[in-house]
Image (cartoon, rainbow, N blue to C red; front, side, top):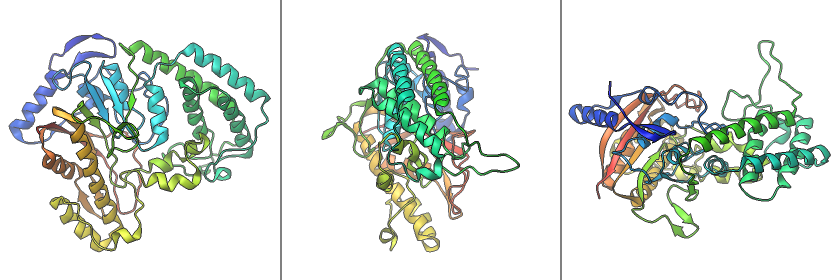
Length: 446
């Protein structure tokens, strides 16, 4: 067993450099991807709660152990390094980056994901938060607010009394002044919005819960009780985060588009400014992130119901493609992918277009990653392969090829079985379940 060096702070007790060196040696000697279990590679990270990771649910969240393993390696990045996740979701990489004593940068197309990441990586006064909570409860008790925000199909997802209670609770949160404390309350409220709905909690996308095997759908829900429970749980998570972090460097949002990373509108993230990128981009047509969060997006007023499709169109990996865009086959420029997709196109032009569009847009995102990475910096790419119309779609191979064409070299390939990433069990009748993910470590040479 490899002996790991200890380090001096609570969030990251061990240096994983020896394990990474062992895996690199095995890969370079055999040329074969190394089979691993990230849970076993970092056994000191117990499954379950850690800091603010579970502040809010989200589909297909990256396993914290993956980010932790690479961030803990002194040969991959040093303390104080600048670490980017351009497909951040709710900030698993950003949070682990801060706990490792490094500086976090993140981007995501979903405004709810950006809000959650901001809250879970920020220093928030629990005393101020509790004072705000008490004010919200007081407003709730005397509020008669009954006009709901623009939530898609609201009467389908909620009982009338639940809508009324949520409106009163939102009125209390809206009465708070802007700031991180209000954002903390909004994220807590967002969790309650889904829990109090009639959507099946077992599925990431909203599907109306049906009565089955004698089980009846719970009709009466105390929104206030649910909010109070979630608030207490989130306060404990924030307290744990503040205890684990060695220093408090809030995450830095660099926009909503992985293809155009910006410190502020019109101010690009400087070229060569990032030491390490760890990211798990979406899979081709595998997740409906906007639909999965549509209730929260509406209740928080982040997106109008009429704008959900427009927001979805900004996401890489989406399933909706205009028909005029697949009247003819579109080449991705990756020969091994085009060979498969030309065959798929003859059977199902739409599925071929979804996959082609995905690769074309991912190539653009990888080009932006290459731009902001310093020479010698590394990209850790977590990606799964799937099946399109019965044909294996090797996303890991195609994206690796795109990276190599940009001037990156592959240092390591790993394979880990997915225990539970919240992946949808049935995405499309022409697709398949993703059960293994590849982790590619690439170095920017030029």
